Image (cartoon, rainbow, N blue to C red; front, top):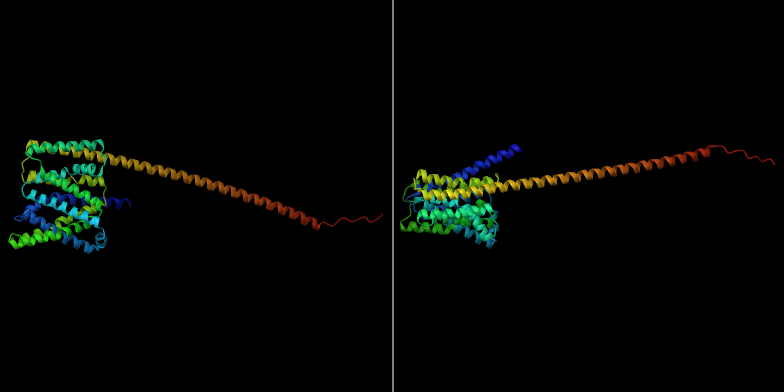
Length: 366
């Protein structure tokens, strides 16, 4: 059983690395779609993602949720909000990558955990631990340093971080599986996206048919590129602890940052390095605090389990002692009954003996 658990964890880790690795390599894929603009790429991603996810759900025969969802207007409204927010996130990211802003895009996913915490405080009234407050404060300082370095607020990073943070918040409220959620969101996006692509074609501005079959295949592959990491992420999420997922999530922005600096040779002046260093310090604090809290929780749960086990053992011992005492009482009662039976038998023997003894002769003489 333990060997099976370790094998499952290995599979989960491999899927986690695959998911975040693919997300981290996105900056290498979207430039291949040129000369398509960011809006056309975004529309194709919406359309083909629905095609791919619908095919996967059809193979898995997981359609029951759709009928239930249609009967819940509030959840549908939340999914529509999620679809709008993720469309903004996808569009800005594609534009950033295709306009040599990969490093700034990676920053958005570095600061996303800090934004998620801030949204939890502002919208969900969550209480932060001191280390989390320190991390958020350092993150704000980092944004100021980067704004000075860029000569403007890092709006690409902020839009990506806040849109993805809001998306995660909505998804938490919707409580729908990854594939199902993506299917519902892209179903809402499908008609506007398909309409936009048809309009582009009518204006002669579509690249889908004008740039050859290879280009068309790459645009269609945006559906697979979107769905495949999500499938791997789902396989990882059910097999590895949440703390491990929290650590793996930094792989994507790390890969994006390295691609931006090393492959695309984007500029990194000293003030930008300083800003990123502050962000990494804040994330280090968050990670350390999360791991410490997880260990404390695990120890507390283990202690509670041990206490419950001890209480159960004591209760079992008490029950066993009571059963033994009851058994002893029963034995004593049985012994007493046996003594009574013996006394009765003795009396009976005496009576029988008395019957067999001849009566003494009666003297009739005067």
